[in-house]
Length: 237
Ligand SMILES: [Zn+2]
Ligand SMILES: [Zn+2]
Image (cartoon, helix red, strand yellow):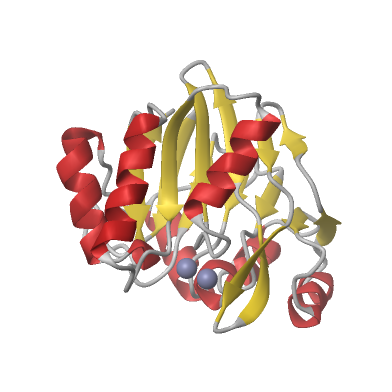
């Protein structure tokens, strides 16, 4: 399956919008997160000549602006599209989807939303000492499982454990997205990188809230198998 990065902090060409947040198109039929602003997503879709006609659903990892901020643009381009969220997302986000005519789908547990593409359903994390609901995406391909995370507020290893339990220890091939390791002590970061290696994970793509210290550690451990995930880049999983 091909992944195409639609929002991140670096790009393959300088007419693309970049910033804090993440968005990734999966196999031309599913959008995972929407970046921080509709105007950025609109520009990147236009510059990359991506037609959303085949899109079946948009998955929002969690209710933070850097992931849900571009949602309006998708709802404008694909009226009535399915928007997969978690039950405990804010009332404001649910109202926005309804206002723009999207179809809300709430998953509290694992669900296969497209052939071989799953959401984990709601996992509770914390952000600024409050609970936050988050879900990750899991792609099951010939290479193994690819997990795409938003910010991983519940903890990247906790998310991976949940995926491993659901798929009975099936090999995880790649993990991409935000791992939320900013300001974490070096020993915590090292332990997480070691765990990834121990689990036999082949490719990583740490973005935004992973933080520069953790990104450096992943780069050291994974070398060419650590993706930068620039906007416009395509990756096969
Ligand atoms: Zn984020
Ligand atoms: Zn977040």
